[in-house]
Image 1: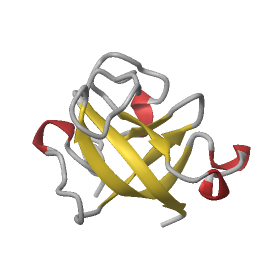
Image 2: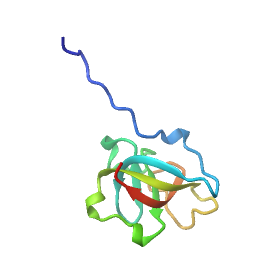
Image 3: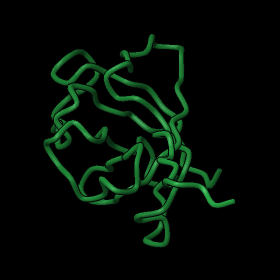
Image 4: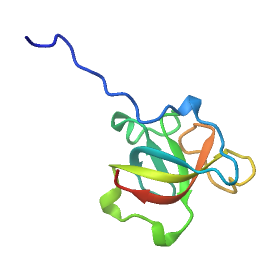
Length: 112
C-alpha cells in the first residue's frame, strides 16, 4: 500500500517563538548554515538564500578560531550561542539580514 502524499519535514526551530536569552543562558539551534560577512541560520533547507523574509536568523561568530570552513556552507549544523533583540543591548552594529528581529551571537558550530 502506497502513501497518497508527501510528509513535510518539521522545521528545526520556529522563529516566531524564539525569544532573547539571558546573559548566562545559551541556546542551541539546529538548522542550515550560510556563511558570509555574517552567518545566517535557516530552520528549513528550502529557504537557503532568502534574506529579509524572516525565514532565518542572522548573526556573528564570536571567535575567529571557531569559524567554520567553507565545507560548512549550506550544511545542516548545530549552532550554540545567545539570542539578542536586533538593535538592543549586545547586538552592536550587526545587521538583521534576515528580518527576524533577533541576532545570534554564536560561540560554537558543530555537525549534529
